[in-house]
Amino acid sequence: MATLSSEEKREFVKLDEAVGMGAKAAKVLLTAGAALVRIRDAQLYRDVASTWEKYLGRHDLTARRANQMIAASAALEAVEAVAKETGTTVPDLTERAVRPLAGLPIEEAKAAIREASADGGLSPRSIAKAAGNRKAKGAKKMQMPRPVRLKLPGGIVVIEVNRKGVASGVTVEALLASALEALRRQAAA
Image (cartoon, rainbow, N blue to C red; front, side, top):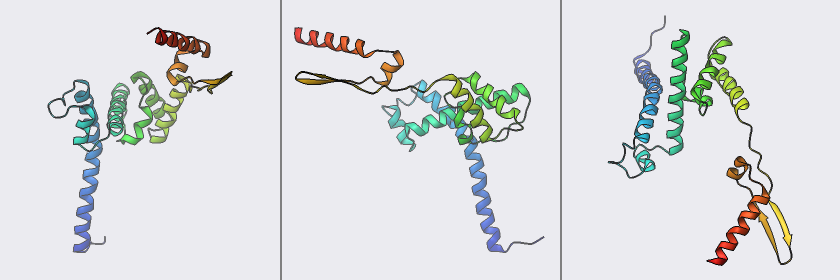
């Protein structure tokens, strides 16, 4: 067995410390995600910041990153719940590995984890595949219609349906009728 020089030993100690801190950080991330949920939902930040975004700024976090941490925490809770139910050992998973589970209802996330582990082990790839199967079944991608351009004598009227309108099933005719009614009310006022 080869021995390390004193310089190599010092380097190893530093690097080994960094690995230990990284491993702890992954576990702390889950705790932080759960804490963020509680702080946000109960607005416990009110004494230190006027808004949620300002509170996050205190920790150099963006709202997007905080939401990723929250989603990862919820997903890893689902992984732990399945592990307890099935009695299986789950490897340490990173936040990125469970990110595909974000947005799934807890029962769907649990089903995706069961499916992912059934193929011979839980891995980031199997989680992504199982979650993708669930998301594909759950919701179809919203098709945005093209704007309708009506050329009229003296002008052009453009009607563009937004995502909310598409989701509610609004029609161009209904939008036109609403626009005419709004114009009538505006003229009467």
